[in-house]
Image (cartoon, rainbow, N blue to C red):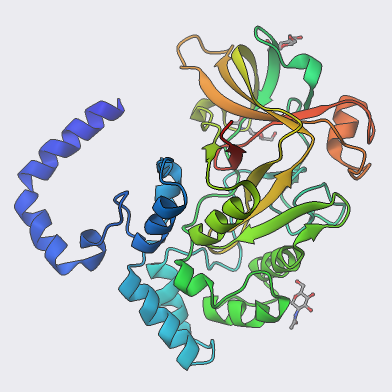
Length: 365
Ligand SMILES: *[C@@H]1O[C@H](CO)[C@@H](O)[C@H](O)[C@H]1NC(C)=O
Ligand SMILES: *[C@@H]1O[C@H](CO)[C@@H](O)[C@H](O)[C@H]1NC(C)=O
Ligand SMILES: *[C@@H]1O[C@H](CO)[C@@H](O)[C@H](O)[C@H]1NC(C)=O
């Protein structure tokens, strides 16, 4: 199907080629391109320098800022010269050019599950302080036991599609001026994006920036970092894992699954990382620009699996990544996984699938 679309598009391009060239000459964002063909040349150059043997994942290409380096430096200069205050017209223009989510009431693709990693609550462990609005109960299959994970096993699986839709990252040049880990920058952030502190998005920004200002999770003792630009993510990965890395991502689940749960059969299973090695996971957070909450994974095993959805013979199998936590002794006893699996902190292993749009970084063995 995709091939068909691309062939059609190819013919269309031929037919209107002259027109496209004319548009490209006037539109700098079409002309600009980094080594992987995206607009954010600087982010792509940083990726190539850090990970010369790792192609830029297609999903990350889509998360690049649509701003050209010229536009990024225009806005940086403007921010600095106006002491981080923009007129509402400029805020609107920045939000629209950079495709940011500047709405005061962000809407989600689906209700947030009650284990949300991207709410202003603790995005590593479950928090009682998560707002209840729009939150739905944990679906069965969100967490499972290690014993359930083997080739041929059948188990319930919720949709792996992410409830938070993707916004692009800010270009690094702009993100640098808006530190998401400094609570003192909240007023500037809100004012720049034209968002009121008392709105839902204001609440989200306050919570996320508070969380991001801690570089270590005190309870779990894990190093964590919020990445507000592709460059931020690259430097955290290089700092913790080095340059010989790979990144795993679950595929989105088919649309017909929506929020329903369905049994899947594990057709194949592959252990990718053992408990002796630390890895990183980068969750997508709800924020006006792409913001990933990255943290180290210790005492975990990482698996990749091909899953067949039982309800549909015709649907292709899905590639999904699972993480199993072998040490839950420091988890909040209110974590819904314990209730779902009938266990408690420190007892047994807790596994879950990684949602599509989240990254698991491994050292190349
Ligand atoms: C902004 O809202 C947060 C709660 O969302 C509150 O804690 C904070 O004090 C408010 N800041 C100002 C300046 O009103
Ligand atoms: C999703 O779940 C809600 C609440 O359980 C239900 O009302 C809705 O019909 C479901 N949608 C689909 C596509 O299954
Ligand atoms: C899903 O699998 C479980 C366990 O294998 C089984 O008990 C249940 O009946 C299955 N549900 C469906 C809808 O196939």
